[in-house]
Image (cartoon, rainbow, N blue to C red; front, side):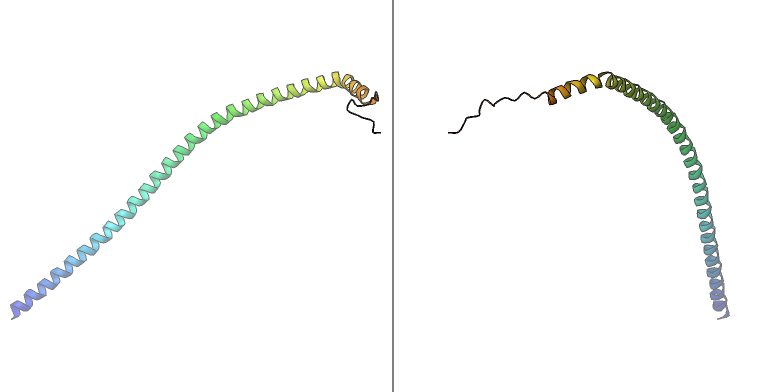
Length: 118
């Protein structure tokens, strides 16, 4: 009976050691997963910074060319406005005189469809 008791006791101890080893392996696995996650996050951050830097470079190249285009367009617009103002100043008096002559020189005439009622 003692041999059976001893065998059961050994089995219980072996089961306890196996359980302890399993728990230890789970802890190592969790620790390794956590470490892998941290490494992946660091790698992702580094990649994101690199791509952001490339994006900013491309954006600055494009925006730089756009700003020069906008300056060129503004210069053209200013030139056209100046030209239109000059044209306006050149012809405003002549057009006003023509308009006033048409409005003020009234020539009363009877309309051709007017019929005198008896």
